[in-house]
Length: 129
Image 1 (tube, rainbow, N blue to C red):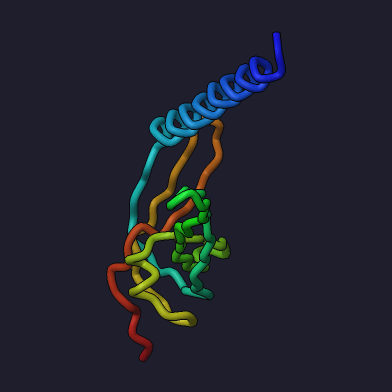
Image 2: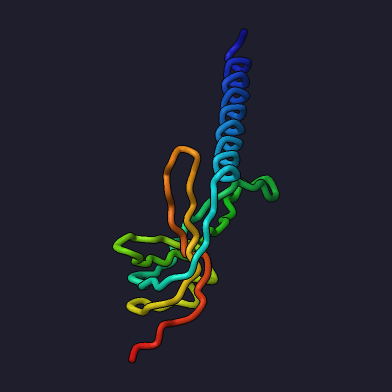
């Protein structure tokens, strides 16, 4: 057995492990219970989080790296003394910091008992009197 065979075996094993991790993540998400309700949330912060990924591409015998931008739209809310994070682009566009909103809230309960809150949708802004 030469070094190339060992490297190929390691790569195959790595691919199998990565496929297993992805399948487990999909199974966890698919078996989670979702409960929706509407209530008032307070937007404390919002920002864009940009991460760049580069892939190599051979053009005319010269290897160049092409950037694939990945922009996340993060909105942070306070709900019942809990910090609730949303990465929904539509929610990000509708909110401003230091404002109250009536929102559709998703409570996600996983099989292991972990509970996660998510602001699924902004219904309307709460007008101050």
